[in-house]
Length: 463
Image (cartoon, rainbow, N blue to C red; front, side, top):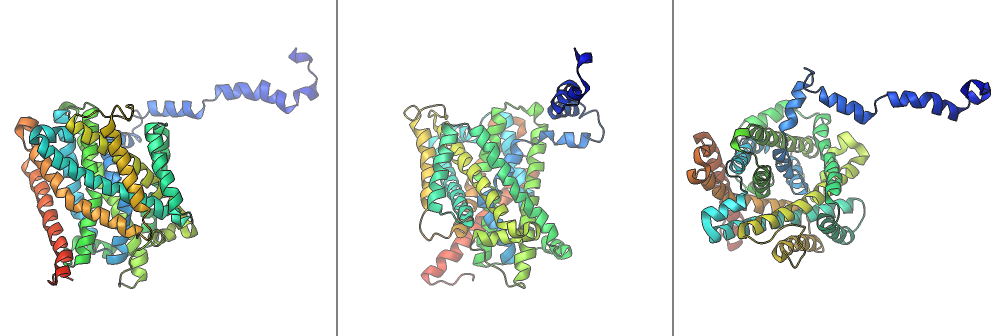
């Protein structure tokens, strides 16, 4: 019995731990228990209520931040060094436009309970759906190529050949998506992308002239040059991608959210789009305050991932390359898995083919064929010897910007069709902004293409 145990024995550490410390530990709530208690009191604490309001964020946040993946970082990181803060005004325009476009798609999902590809087939028939899906397939294949180019660029920062990492990434993405536990791997990829949040910190630590930032953002001006138009259309193409609209509408429809409970989804679309664009603007500020200022206003051309990483030096110092590479790999792998998969679902949904990773190859050949084909094309293009990876990322987003008006026309015709939307059609303000975005981007894309093609046949047009 305990009262007969000698004193030296009582002083032994293992006995103390078993008889004294263990009951105390059992009475002390563990961290998960404390977290559960804390979340139960979330709404009761007036200091925590503002944070509780963020619970509505969902598919809108994921869709809006898709543009900040590998294909998006390259244009943003190239804008600041090349043109300083001048293209921030483009971000203001985009910040007005993208919430409107995302909200329209979310509203269509809630009002109809159907995805975008379904509605296009029902409204425009097989031919209309074929044209829309071809546009989507081209745009998303280019995004997939840009993501594998991002993987190649990031691996070379670590001194590892792209001929090793890109094939491994393609096979790994296919395996974990179709055969493995992709849910867990996705969380790892997502966590890696948070490395890009270092850009906002770097933007502050670089100590930019905030008065000049504000002036360049507010004062309207536009440079009608071929290079400026190219980067402008690329910036729009990476911010308002076709994939984003497809994703948010399908997500709302799959969650079976109706118009009676649509309020949080509308808030999600607006708040998430604005948050994403603020991050994008801070990336431009970080690169402009470091690389553009260092060039004394002459501009600094980004030709490699290492140069894009230099803007993080005020925050990360010598670890800037590692931080940039980790974020680039995570964002690239995540998008390289999700974009081809969502494209396969959309195309098969539009034409009634069997779809889903649970089906075997012979059971859903179209679905698996599109998915594997996009992965293969993305990987093979990124492996082309001597391919300028950063330029490839920018060109892919420029083509996205050119193709975007086609999908926007489909969306606007659908969201204004009372047979589909009933009383939930667009109002005059939304229509003005959305149609204005479509027309403006179409005109800029046309002028940009002319500025590239006409000089090739001896006709001078812009410089």
